[in-house]
Length: 250
Image 1 (cartoon, one colour):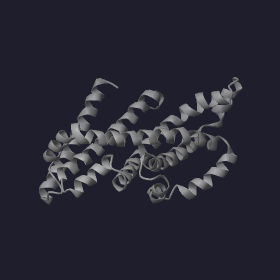
Image 2: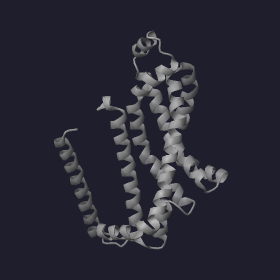
Image 3: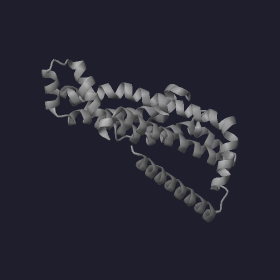
Image 4: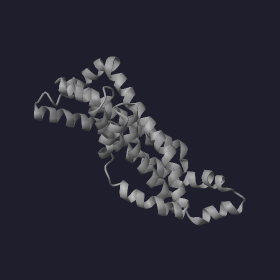
């Protein structure tokens, strides 16, 4: 990326930030309610609470998201590759996908809480279900889009099955996999927020609702800001990893 393009990107993000900040201030002025605090009030609460309590809750939420994303990749990617390459596997998995994917994963949360309790496992599992299904579908469809001639050309040079997956299928599917991760990230954080606010005493979801119940709206806003920054950071990290690992897709 040239210096001019970097400057343009920085300017665009700065302009978007200032627009959102101005919109936030205008809505706070228009609503004029303590439940919708001004940006400065939230920023002061964020700076005050971050070193003491907010940092710990952010770490809990971040760990749960990262573990869920990793498990979704470890489980969903091989199954997606298998379904994309093997018609028999696809014939078995596709009906299951079409029946279960439209069901909101948060609907399973009461069952998961009954079976696993309100600990780490239940929160990680519900987020994993969101990520896993998206990775499985995206990787399967990406494999199906690979021209058969590519695989035949590599096979004719003596490549084995492992070489085909490593040097053809995985590089071809990586951009779609990163897209699936970015798409599922928002839903994963939303489901995590719901699970943390409903059960447990750690995480940003709990922190935000605790501020609501105690009518400490600035603290509530600080938790929402931390949740937004966590999502923004993870989204930017995925974008950076895609640029590093998929230079051919730029």
